[in-house]
Amino acid sequence: MVAKNLLNLLFFANFPFHYEQLPNRLENNKITPQKGRGAQMNTDNRYQKLALDTSFYADIVDEEELSLSPKTQQLAIFPKTIVNKIPSPDIPMPWGINPYQGCEHGCTYCYARPTHEYWGYSAGNDFEQKILYKPEAANLLRTFFNNKKWVPEPILLSGNTDCYQPAERKFELTRHLLKVFCEYQNPVGIITKNALILRDIDLLKELNSNNLVQVVVSLTTINEEIRRKLEPRTSSVAMRLKAIKVLSENNIPVVAQMGPVIPGLTDHEIPDVVKAAAENGATQVSYILVRLNDVVATIFEDWVTKVFPDKANRILSNIKQTHGGKLGDTRFGTRMRGEGPVAEVCNRLFKMAQAKYCPKKEMPKLATQHFKRPQSGQLELF
Image (cartoon, rainbow, N blue to C red; front, side):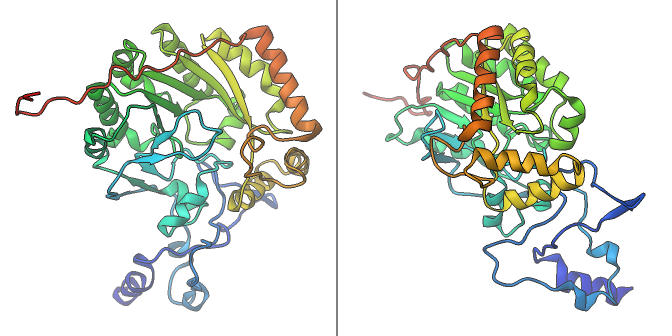
């Protein structure tokens, strides 16, 4: 037993290693997807030239110990900066903050998955099981705002992974960041799938008193069964609609975004999603079309084949028809809307639903004139 544990420690404990996919569980001769997780596999990391072949150790290490753990690990990281420039013209805000890397929500289509490879992990299960958090996020933001070269502009929370994912309940990094935004009166935008945002309604109301905040709540589907499979650890449909309603009741500008629309799986829900968002007070509604770039395509194909075996071919075919025969698209301007007849049908259906249930309104422009740097202990002479 001692020798076995030593082998585990020596060969496996400190090295990220990946498998082509999780062991299949058979039930009535059918593959049973892993519950509570989005990705059903760990893909290879394109930045790792070497991989650990575990077959050599099969006779000395239990197979269960080699399998991927369903438990979530939370690992602290300490970057030097917290605010990143967003180069994409498709994103309405020029700067972004991501207090977490990786996301336990487990959305199978998530475009942020490949970024986990920069940290030596897989874009598959590792992305939702190894969550990197930044304990110094608030202090780093203060340092950023204190730089005299900073000209106030809106900053987005989060452009990559959800700032209100489950780890936020424990670490409260997003809440501490919002306190800094209040302190400096800098405008902020928030994108989330989690009703945990309502915990911070006090700070959001304070920011909104000077027109310093806008919120986007992602509402991919109103079918709870599909939500559980597609986004297993996000807030329920009912809780997201409640978040939209409460934000609206407090006069906080909130956009309900159907992001993403998946042709063949959720596109038929467009009118119902728009109607539900409007009935709960959304200021605006919007949508983006699914795109599966790089390794995300492999993860999604594996997932949809296991979870929706009867619909998989149709879903994948429809997605390809919106991106010129491919599952993904990186071109600015077209990647979020797609091209071709299938994309056009989605666009027309959305516009009809928008006109009927939630006519487009202009979102108030976030204010920048209230920005201030709190004085230090020493009084300023000039």
